[in-house]
Length: 142
Image 1: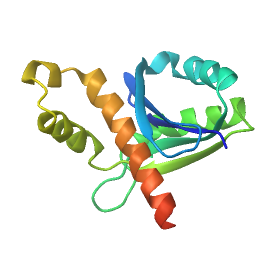
Image 2: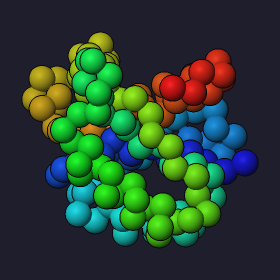
Image 3: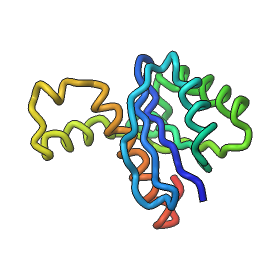
Image 4: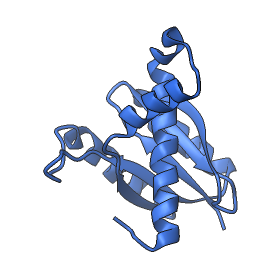
């Protein structure tokens, strides 16, 4: 069983999270400038056994894809071409940034530290991955 890598794709930065090899625990890994994301993912998957990449699927409240899909779709298509042996899925990411901010507040993080967008992106990727793992356990692929 390989790891699951999750990406909270953004135009400037992308949050990255990963599971342990048994796919039980999701941990924030890093935040990568989106311009270098493909290189980062290829490098990471060259030395870690990654079974699946989960990418946050931005949707509006009416369940329609958000405007940012025009940036994510080309990346996903290129990723599938560059890493044909790794399964890629998209997973609903609505409210992950809001939940990430609330998590930082609940964790007692100082207001000045909560302004760090890289931290928010990394936590959001962890939330996407954690939600994905929970849905997988419940048999509810969304």
